[in-house]
Image (cartoon, rainbow, N blue to C red; front, side, top):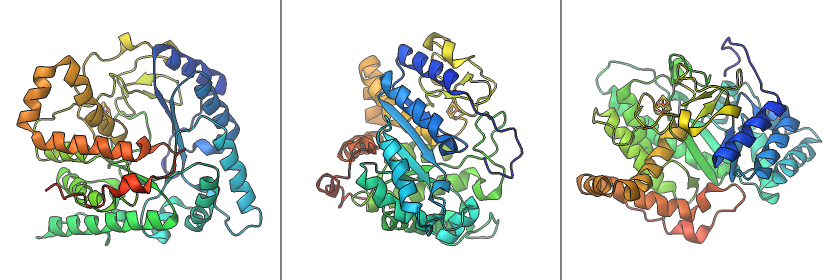
Length: 379
Ligand code: SF4
């Protein structure tokens, strides 16, 4: 998506989007995420389709911004501009509103995004959103600029220990920074780099998001070790149960829950409006989304090609709920072979409930979240 990445930018017209949303509602889709690029560049169209999704009873509707709207915080009309945006989103059917934040260091974030002054703009804008009953989430795409001290891959002795420590410290700094800015919800997107055939242009070959499998495992471990310390301060979407499974996969263990991308999560591209199992399996084209039916989808989850958090995290959370009634023997066998996963999973569900399932229309409930203050380290 970076401006320096050369590819044709495209956008679907709202008439076609509405036909797709109507089909989504007819076939029982429960959640739609409008992503980018930058959805807020098309504010009128965006509000129109957010409202339409609400009108046809899609219960969960999400969108977000790279933050360009928070530029110019020192201009006299800044607060009015933000109030107007918050007001328009407030009246839409939105349940999640994310703002990208790439680092705990404002200068690095602004340089990476090419948006000078944007962090101060976010700080000033968040109370205005909160007054309007919208609690945006900070969306961190994990990258090397999150580290306490950024380092490139090296074969030197001790590199992986230093890499882990720097990520662990950096993630802690990031959560502290997000809280200080006024965020109440935080999410982390796992590293995506260089996926062949991708239709979603979120990946890049750049070193800042390129990690080998050992580095990825250490990033998941750094998150896993840090999140419990911040769960009472911030609503942190990243589930420990999913991190635990991804760490095991990165260690070479057989994946427990293949991704449900292509089974009940899908991606629709902004060029042809076609349906794909996800943003990365560009070869598996299920055709126009306005004609899409679940019978055209994959029958069974099988893919573990990437760690796209949008699909891997919900898979880890939902799959046990699918297995318990449908395959109780398998679910029980898994419970005994990996009790730790179930313990984490139960804890995640209880935490999600305390967080109001991350609905951006609800303020954090300090009393409920405080129950997670002394959350034990999970080893
Ligand atoms: S694991 Fe990755 S590539 Fe495979 S279906 Fe899920 S999101 Fe797509």
